[in-house]
Length: 416
Image (tube, rainbow, N blue to C red; front, top):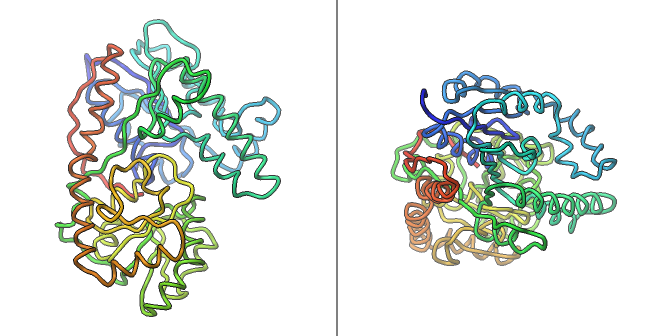
């Protein structure tokens, strides 16, 4: 590492292992940075089990600061946002231990400070001459909370709407003081750039897929009890829970009426109680965390992605496409992916239409194979990590940072 310039990298969640959507992106960004810089990592750890990866991160980074975050205590602390006028999520991540750690790290001869997510930007708001401040928003979080408010009942609809408004104002402020900021898709960047009061443009670089790892040609051990229909996602994440619950309530009965022996697997870590309760009912199995999601994708006839609240780009969709498994998705789930309905995936906006598309794939092997192959080809052509990281390289190169464009594929497990 000797001789490389130094950068600070802040993340609201430990970026390893890359087993969730945001951690996949933050890990790829961190690993990419280490090719050209000595990286000082500071992040929160919300799962004590993740501390076992501390040694690995210390082997990758120039220094590693991991700060334990107690979600229950921090949720209580976030209420202070009502008093200060700040977004509750920013108050949630406002921690004196992190502030002290970052203050110490900022005394190093850094050429850049990079914050992953709007909630971590608060630690580098004060400019230091001679260094660049870069923000990777990933998703437009303000829009997520606005969407939640539209389907919530009082008083949560008011709280979510407030969070959306306050975060939108904060995001605009961050863009205006940062030297560069990025969203995850062109659509997300446009959402930022159309806001009143914005003085700088937001760029974008998309998530990618390791298409060699997610490869349908690989010989993988198959699940003991697979399923024709699969849903993949972290099952303690609200958007995933709401999506599959609505699917089971409204779509699955229609599908099972025509195909009574059909099975659905809900694959993902930390299933909440209402998801656990589905296990064993009407051909549904709930797996919990699996070591490797690829066998479930490989043996499935199709994947469903029925998300209604979906910001940015969905890793679970990209990974299924890379495995050439045809997908039936809501319009929200494929936003930001440059495919087309009936070519690279099937899009449905209501229960009846979703059921029709599912049966069309189950009953037409040629159609399923055609869509799966086209999806795989799109991923290989446009959504490999090196392709996406080169966009970031070019943008940061304009800031005068000596940024490597090499981005060899990493052999690490990634799941949605």
